[in-house]
Image 1 (cartoon, rainbow, N blue to C red):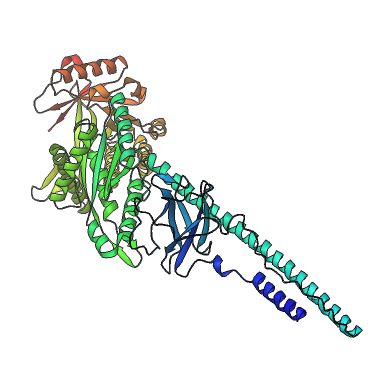
Image 2: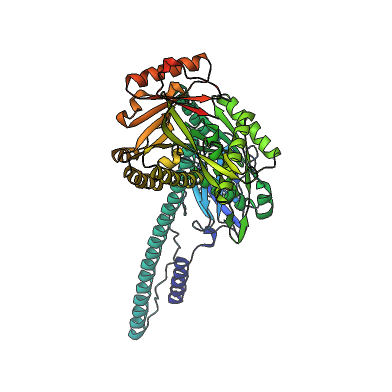
Length: 598
């Protein structure tokens, strides 16, 4: 009987050592959170759970937290009903405003087998009871047989006892090994939980830092806060340099149907795509921000020219209208844009407000377009568009022709011939001057300038000499194709003793490509539209053929022109006066020639 009892007892101990105690696992369908306080006081303490994955019906309110479900030697515990598919719980143990730890905690359910031990003041989560002692089972003492038995019986009994002792020792070693594995597993679970917590804390800190820096998490653009900081900086710079800038208030059209039909994930994809396109459409010095929802703002630094602003507005509209791929769907939105120009239209919040008003004018005009805050700028853009349409039509029909203005010297002789574009009119059976393109499309301007340059070369070769001038677009002057064509024309007409003169606005930066052309015989001319902007140090020395000024204007303009003429004369640069109708050139300008315009 004692041996049988010891054998059964050893078997029971082995089973207990190899199995996980049933009381160490939370009830099915619940997550159990143990809570321990050193002072043993738990009155008023409760559990607050939020987020997805629990079956409490609604978030436990801060004033009415979940009460403890029971007590153990460790402390109290809370049983939280959880959904079958739940993977984690967000919780905090508190009494009023007093928290067990300073920050909210995250419980990964699978990693902790739906049961966790929490110690007040300790931010760590424990997968097993901290400091728990291994369970010890009592073993009854076997009575020795006092009856006399044969020697064989005692030998057999000794063998059995030896086997039993070996089995018990092996069982204890196996138990210790399992305990070591359990402790290592618990430590690994703690490390994984700590890594998850640190990763979450790092992500939260990163999000907070981006928010404080004014960065939108969805698009990576500036937020409203970041935009206002950028606007203040750009405006201060503009005041300092007496310059301007353009502000574009952009609202997406047909954005709500995308969210309604395809979901918010599709809407987010549209916002991210449009944001990246807006950034790609502007310069690095420009600013792009998302004010919220589907509203964006672009600030184009040092871009106060309404025609140049219109060019950029066309590009920004195109950014929104281009198809956006989302899975198997092709999403389409558009953009209405309001444009305000600093300092013409205001400053600070007033500039943003007036651009917003202009944006609604664009929506009322049919959407997918832009409108300026100043109606006169809209009229200027309309005139420019009409002029470009005339040029495109003439080039498409092969009717782009040349009209020659003559610069007449003081002796009445032709001093220089200047080329102007014209179109053959079938209705009037004559050439009609095409309107000047102030800020033309770069592609249109290049095509037209290349054709006019060839006409100039043919005329100069036919005349076998003379000075021939043309005014290419600013974009053409920096285009390698136009520069290459100029190099060829300079060589062609130089062979017959003719000279090519390129006229450009005095307010623009000198193109780098001019240096090589000047070395080959090219001459330049400056057209002074705003006398105040002319800098004598940019007059190009002996390469400058003339400075062109206008006699028309108020008294302030005439005095500025006189100052420019005097500076040019002192630098040895000829002055040409542009006249309209019956105007006469003032003698004080000492003009070498006059250009009479129709």
